Image 1 (cartoon, rainbow, N blue to C red):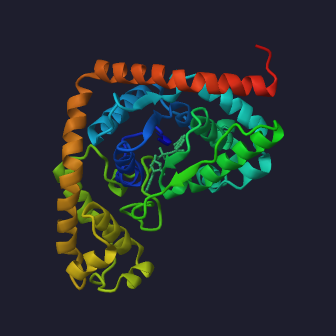
Image 2: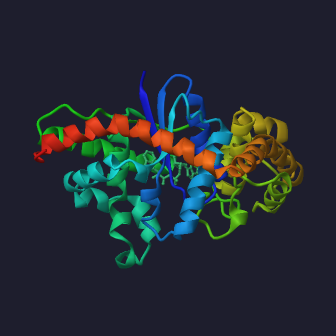
Image 3: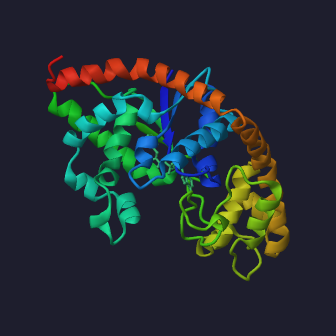
Length: 331
Ligand code: TYM
């Protein structure tokens, strides 16, 4: 059975993009993979996090993952900082990875913007730690949204260079599992910007804890253009907001964009938005209410994470000890 590893930053409430791009696929992959899912709190502090909020968000995200259907008994769910193998392998990878490779990472450029000098060194080496997350478990498949594609290519480069430099065939190749639809869910306020937990406007995203009224309101207020929906999917290319809403609907209703337009093409956005709000509420509503229930018992959530960390540690420790031996650390 192939081993899956994937992670999410506990920097806010998971949004619809996290769910459709990643979490929903994690749940499905549990059927025929050995899965390790991680709340990457060490990645989160590459930009400032209030300590109390980070603790709270780690628990809140654990609740959302459980409410979405992650099974912490059959699989592993834990927070990154609880397993020291990530930091140890991350450091070794800082020494394998090349500055030239990191300089090409578009996500660093997007996040740092023009003010590059004032960002943490951690944000810059972020992809090296991500490679360590996956390879500490020798995981071979990584389900992510489209925005992580380049990071996974870098992880493969690191694995190959390590194998080459130390003359071993130690790390496996990693395959990115990117869903065919909704791999890049866009902001509800701007169809050219990715939906993100860190966008200052909560109106730009559906959070997985939003109630029915909030979802309906956010969809009603979602930016659109004045034209009715097209009947030909090719016409969506030039209409980013319409395209985003149609794609969200299609994924949630298990339809293609063409099917959605066969039903709603020619309609104004009013009725389409109300149909979209209905399918969203049907998916998000039960997750949101189960999340609220789970958050009433933070002790239970911590117990889940501690149990997951112990099992993750048992897999990663021998791998990373062997890496340390290979690089020449005296044991
Ligand atoms: P993060 O926390 O930004 O996002 C978690 C997952 O959600 C996906 N995602 C999206 N998918 C579609 N549309 C969107 N608008 C959208 N926004 C986010 C992301 O692609 C991701 O799969 N670097 C990672 C966390 C990480 C990781 C890892 C992932 C750390 N180590 C090892 C895989 C393997 C991140 O910041 O995800």
